[in-house]
Amino acid sequence: MNTIRMQTTNDTARRPVRATDSSAGLDLSLEEDVVVRHGSITVTNLPYRVAIPHGYVGILALRSSIGARGITIPNSIGIIDADYRGALKLTLTALPSTDPVTLRAGERVAQLVILPAVF
Image 1 (cartoon, helix red, strand yellow):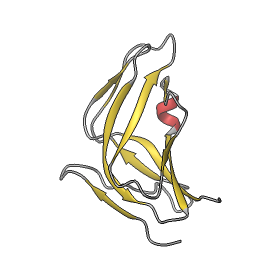
Image 2 (tube, rainbow, N blue to C red; image 1 turned 90 degrees about the horizontal axis):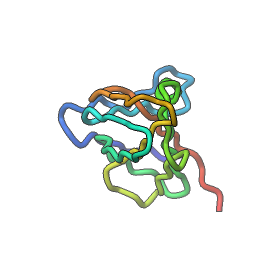
Image 3 (cartoon, helix red, strand yellow; image 1 turned 180 degrees about the horizontal axis):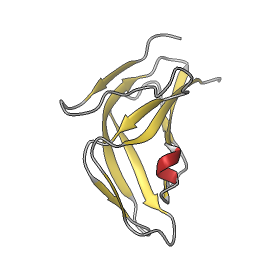
């Protein structure tokens, strides 16, 4: 696979990191505080842009620690096509019976996994 080019979109953003050598994805952090509530959908900007090589796809998934707090992505995962160059966004909602949850700026909330896209 080619090198994946990734940049942060502001000076205070945490760099994307692999938690361990065996991690499948890069941990991504929030740009600002976000309150997630049941019954509403929150779209938040992630402070990253990525250039995924042709023939690959980016999968944006929640970290398990965020799901354990009753938060989910309404469409289950995010797909990032190889030709997309805009800022990454994350769509969140809370499960029923979940009190509002505040996620803090800099908190690792999602993982970006790059996989071959077979056509």
